[in-house]
Length: 326
Image (cartoon, rainbow, N blue to C red; front, side, top):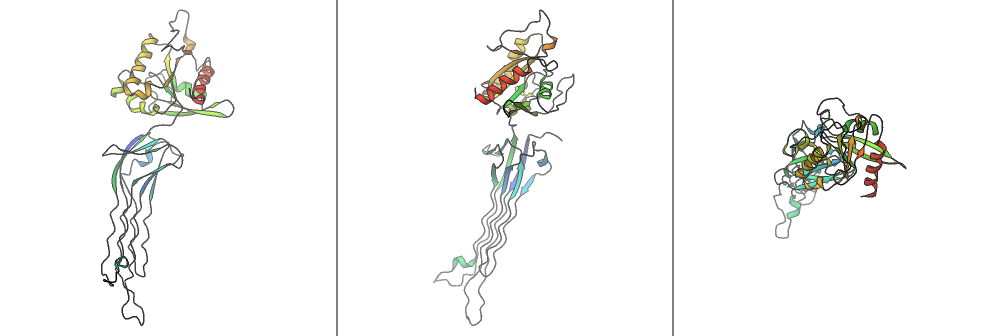
């Protein structure tokens, strides 16, 4: 299944039903009064969180979501049936924007969260509403109101506690596969990971947290180069960034600075997050290999997903940051 994290849709609320013009017809009553009922209200288009889905893929092939219109009122003061709402399921972490104004309509994070994108129109009044002592037989009713129409943009930002960032082949996918049940694609060529992957990590005393493996960055990612610009937004909600740099890198400090620069240029939210620098593939480190003592003022953790060295230390540091709020 394709990973779809942004999509534009048209929504249209149902029209309200027309009011009814009707008069009573009763035996032995020479002049029956008005008894036309109101029209039903139109249904609305609602976006609601479904925790069983993780992408916007299911919405890809339908560009218009239109709710049911209300039914016309009837005689004997019978109210027309209201139109049914149309409820569109979206994954947790979906932002709903008005595509024309840019207004954020809803931030849908958890089960039960919902937002109305297009309201239905009100039903028209039947002629019963217009009866007055001076006009006892009104012969008119109001039509129903049209429903709202709105073009919306849905943007998915994954909900994860920890975001893994780094250049291609820094070992992010391998690390995720070792500490969780996630099975991302792993190979010895750039951009193995083409979509974000999520994994749930157990952390002492029945606790757990979610790690997101974000596709590899390259210099200039904030401008749209590589895959970074497309997926950097998925780490905007994470509490901590684990920055992985391969021990194979010739200049570890320079690569770390490039990554921080890309985060900074993408937005202040990313660069202000707590960071944990990690030197991956430590099993290839040999005597004389240049591993800096500090990165960004923090002592990096040397880790090998192959041998297991440092893996627990990385998880402990990440879990502490997640659960202590540091």
